[in-house]
Length: 274
Image (cartoon, rainbow, N blue to C red; front, side):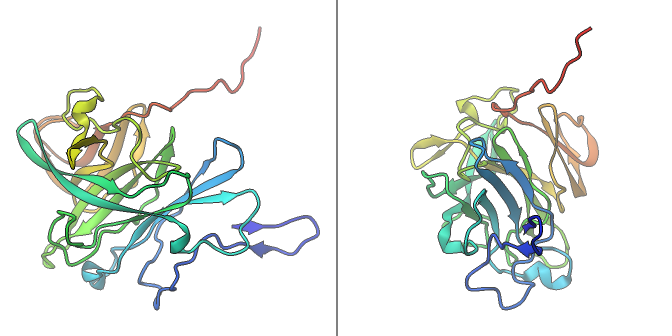
């Protein structure tokens, strides 16, 4: 971030640097603009972005570990950039669940962040025990996140293990903007009943937890766009929609997801008195 005072020369304060630093820029590239949220205690900002790309043939098989970062930028700048060891370490993994008789893979999370410190979410790269798909290219984030009502949304992409397809799968995540952990209440209508209840949680080690991600569709996903209570994400590979807000029987790359954002507020900014 640039910081320029009156009568001062421009200076740049670096917020984060991987340590050890990647040997080549292609290891953990940043391919989207970050999103920024105000801290509700008025003592700084939160900055969000992910790493990874999908632009060349070599990217299909790039298995470098990628991350999604939530960095707190205080009013008083840090004397040194954050490194990975300074952040709360979180991991996104897969859980198989049955919804309305259909088996689905959803995303849940491991880790703690009780102090609301800056955090780093480790994305999937085929780790043992994560119950994810067979991959030869790691999960990555190359679109701009969306922050609203205390929730940060972003899409991720996992390339196909079959190199000939040139495609893959898109997932959407919803995390508490301060902790990187699940929001207190379900954000996704997992069972499609138009409500957000305990029925939209999944069981992990005998406990019901709020899922932090769900499958969107085939192909590269766009940045999420929110309109009222619906999150829109387009994917580069059209698919047959059996049901949902986009209409039954349509072949489309537009995906509409009903979401729950309890903290979303409408504030009166101005008024005119006659």
